Length: 451
Ligand code: PLP
Image 1 (cartoon, rainbow, N blue to C red):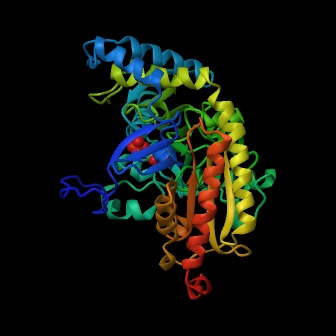
Image 2 (cartoon, protein in one colour):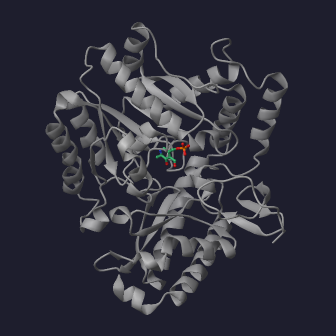
Image 3 (cartoon, rainbow, N blue to C red):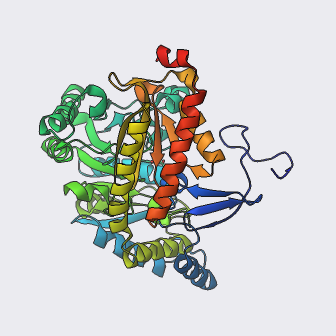
């Protein structure tokens, strides 16, 4: 590896990574010339692949005109056009768009808009936002309060207003059939129980990822779940917020994952697939009935300096143009189905794979010590880290989290860009197969017994 001076940067840890040289389509190269297949689109971000010529050209053209216009001084064409486009793609009535620079900002915005709507409509006793565990909604303190993932929240607990959580519908762990409507009802009714327990008059909103992301490992809802959740929210005057930060932008085969179940939230947020790695961008889209009372009562007390940045919005518009021009959502569905079938075939060769799940190109597999009981591998096996590193060495990037029961249980997201072809799938599956073999051979048998 090229020798480099000590870094002045820091992120989560001291671990160094190869220096990125360039990226094209589904591939990335480091400065030593090693090629990686981006099998997780970064962190499920680069949905249309890297260095898309149309997006780069649109950004260049916008840069020549203006790269910044402060929202209190100017409206800009890209922001207006992108807002129009998003309103046309969003469910009926979700017409009002508020731009931000990332997912956590989008989630914060949704929480604050919901709260200001309650205050503006004389419902100021409502302040609790119910969410699920496991879940991930962002790293700012407000978003973190809704996040159900103790390793990330615990140090900050004393600084946050604790918010109620209900279990995510992980039917595969509870031995329930996700295709059975009774399963959807079983998990959705936990929301009603939580609302009643908290006191309906105090509950402001319920935040849910329509298809779970990194925290649950690409978890689609069981049959009937999304519809029943929506009915329960309406019954108790609780706002329904879809966190589509990871799913928004087509990865599941529809522009918004909620579209698969025809559920209309009051507010939705998206980010990763909107900027698609070309610009830091996110958006909150809210129903007019939520926004208008807030604007009537003095305005939305919230906003970020970079909100509606014309360069970022030009990138976002160009990304959607590319998705539509090249039928990338249809590809996400069809190639996603093939990839899922390929992962299921790997299950036959690798005893450690306990579950394969997901929708479109938001897919994951989970490693277990015992497929019958779904007992997780012990922490000491370090699966979530090791398998990713083995694959990385072999030139395949995948994304992992360990969340089961808060800390144990290892799932791996396999989410290549929506431009992936059958050849790319072959490469992903062959490399994964080899990586799983290496991981299994390295695994100490006594660790397996301990699981
Ligand atoms: N919500 C969901 C569902 C996410 O997956 C993420 C990031 O992974 C976030 C919110 C936070 O987004 P960001 O990292 O852009 O702040």
